[in-house]
Image 1 (tube, rainbow, N blue to C red):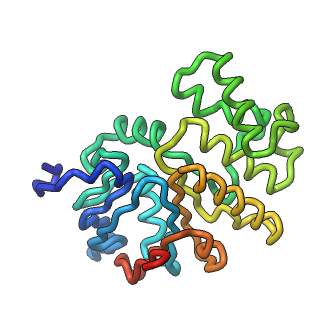
Image 2: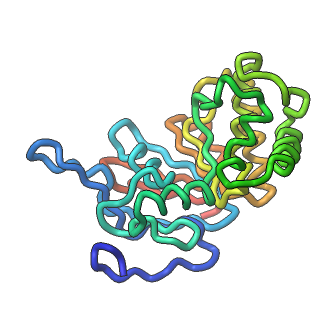
Length: 241
């Protein structure tokens, strides 16, 4: 039973994300803004999705809910078997830490920390001992081709290198879902191709990847695409469908 009194069927074991008639409405003055208006879809573990839509389509609202930064007003959002709509703020924060890896357009690296220390941040929140954090950060830096830069600060890196560090940090908690918000927005086309190649490798290694983008050439890397308009799903395209 949801907090809104509606019975929802639990997702299947292979569904890492599921929206069931999810709505997010805001009251602005006397007007109800239907930012998300009855959205239903599911994403299987190990798949690669893009979410697209023009400004005002509901893309940012969906991103906030996907990222456990907000909850649906009604309906359900299941992430890795748990209904986010029923969680309080502390539960939401813990679920986010344990299940999501975030990659942003502007990298969001901590400028005072080295590459290795930035990668360690999620592990610090998870309470891992220092030696284990250091070893894992080194392994992740190696995985994204940044092991030669472990002691450098973000200001000493190129944009592509910063994004590689951000990817390594996003992988630190072994997340159920990698959530990337316009991940190539601050990169030139050649560097964008390299970063999208890295996402492709992670997908081929079994990671679930969700891209939020307004760029069709970036969305084309995904194997399925959701297009939003006016808070509703305009279309869902799956490769081979």
